[in-house]
Amino acid sequence: MSRLYVARNPRVAARSLDGEMMIMSGRDSTLFTLNKTATILWQSADGTTPLDEIVEHRICQEFEVEPAEALHDAETLARELASHEIIQISEEPIPQPNPAAGESR
Amino acid sequence: MPVRVNTTDPAFLDILQDRYSGFLGSAERAEIEFDVDVTVPVYPVPDIGVRVTQRLGRWSLQAGDFLAEWEPASRTGRIRQTANPYSIDAVLRIVHTLVLAQQGGFLAHSASAIRNGKAFLFAGVSGAGKTTISRLAPPDVTLLTDEISYVRKQDSGYIAYGTPFTGELAKLGENVSAPLAALYLLAQGSENRIDPIPPGEAARSLLANLLFFAEDEELVQSMFHSAFEFVSRVPVSRLTFVPDSRVWELIG
Image 1 (cartoon, each protein chain N blue to C red):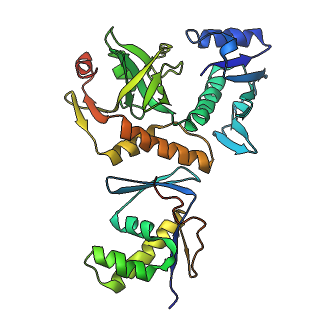
Image 2: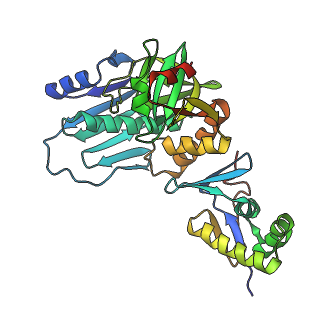
Image 3: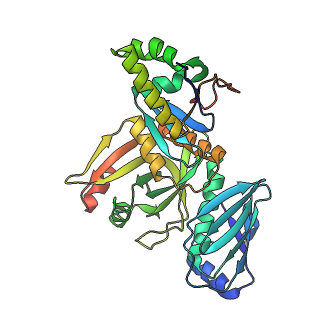
């Protein structure tokens, strides 16, 4: 089975405030508030760490959840975030011009 | 921000002088200059929404009732519209959102007023009570606007300015300013009370009330970060009120 790679879209604006991650699309100014799982996914989406490793090392560490179920849910979430152009997904590593691009300042 | 408007149409000039009375000053101080070409009305006015785009340092502002260009580098622009004051009003609002977004400021859907030397913003969507709280203001309160607030960043704080942009009250704000002391998110209820709100909700609510039209990723990011900067420096609370003047006992 192929692995999925996820990368933050550098064209969105992101801020974390009191544990809440908020993201605004640079394209149409839509504002998103990420839940805890989506926040972990966003923060870990460096383009080079495969999604299954993010799930194993970050999400399963945080939540009591079966790895297979967590991976399935994470893939669904990643595709949803990608549909809003918050992150990019690919079956190949995604080169990032700047690892901190789009992150809160 | 002083704006100079050039027109060769004396009737339109009269309309502008009437529309912006109280906000007129010396043309020599202008920071922005517009030439206005007044055109003959075409009916019906096409309903194409508002589009604000930038290309090669030049902004294009387009709606059914106006077509405008604005070049920040030269601080000049041109407006093509009929002799309708609401059209130039819309252009000026949009241009101010562009300029302010690069300076950490903004226009917001909110009433604002000065009391005891401090400015207060009252934000909310249509029907939240902006006009009501403006109408209830006691005599010692100076109204800046009942509809569109003008906020500039200055040093570590913010300044709220009066605007000629009116809502239902149809009363121009005063052309004065004061340091901003608080932002209240309006809600009508059965008692007058002020409640703190979490920072995340404050940022979300402020963003929802900002005027912003530009289809421009860089400017969207500036506006987004400006909102967070604002809520980190200015207290934001929910103001629940019954529609009578006692609510002002809580303000100032």
